[in-house]
Length: 591
Image (cartoon, rainbow, N blue to C red; front, side, top):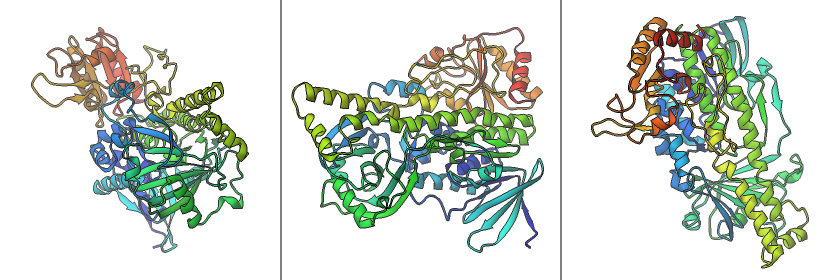
């Protein structure tokens, strides 16, 4: 028995957002395998919660977006981020958040058919693991990955341990996926170098039950910065981000020590009674009952792997990018890592693409990892301006009181303080309206055809806040609402693409592209669906948004990969459409 080896094509280590999403996406291609997780079950604390448009588009591709929206808190619960003395006390500032700013609504509507949703990881993971299991995946909790050997390039022998019995056994797979989080054993075994920058300290999560509905009725928001500079504070509880988990009776109080604090000191340890006392100070209403459900600590990291894959072993999610939750990029990037890899893996396994297509996973996603760990950490640094203006960074209590008192001054001193505070608050808008960092990915790899247009368009000056909508190869397919001539429900260009197939979009005068796509599909051996959008074509561009965003003539075309990123485009009709299309497809598929 000890010498028996379980065999599977696909072994995923980790059942969090990256691993479970990968299984879901692969199952949409009919692929099955084994998932192991050292955890005893799905997440028992909320951890990640902001699910953005880019991630929801991926889940929309396999019909899971509706479940996520129904399980999450709707956008009206996410309308603000607030700054206050306590949840019941003085409010200092608000910012519209996550697409709810009336001045930015058009930008968000133009970017995607999806909206942000507040979906705690405790709700997301069961949705993903349930789909994976119901589509044929085997999931083993309480099972740890120990090590692997690679006797042949396509043979990986993993040693795993049943944590309940203590027994080890082996699993043979063709592919291995390290989705095992920030302490990834797969990364350690592969010895993939990590690019680390100095961390920004420690954070303390206190998950609790407390009915605050009477306090947020007119102060709606899912994130609340609470701070009391005029009072002394415990070393671990200098300031707090109060995060809604479920409206409005479940909360995460994220306590932060002051910048530069010794996070290993004894004063970073407290009892539940001390946590409750500090929580009640920040609530500001002694009548509220508080029940602590969980306490955990985490380090604020700025770490990314130098590369994401080694042969037939691929690493995803927090295993390769580790950062604080600012901008809400964590689980969203995990899901998009998986979406990028899944179609490539299926195409290689079915021999519709060359093996080197899999190399483009790391080429495309590692730069994204660099961007998001940088942005998330900068998101935390961006709060320093308002903290300084209101005295939070001053270690001396009397000086903090004096600074706070200056806000009451009606003259120049007070005016300057208030202006500095306002500027500091507005500076954090890059976190709460970071549409660009969420959607502006530009892939440059062998899986994109840049031969006709080597020069990429410049990103907006504020590429964190502003989305560049473009059909340039390597960018997301632009969203535009479409309809049919006869009454029907509107749908997005996003919905025409994806679903495991290539998609070609053209318009009036582009019928030869559709013929070329049908013939190229047979010649290359891949599915290509093609649609014409425009006046009395397959679908109507009733708002003329596609005409404004496609960046090609009516008789041009946009070729879209199965992950809805543009593979190539032609500005207009050409003399040899089929020959060109075949050339592009073979290049993109690494054939």
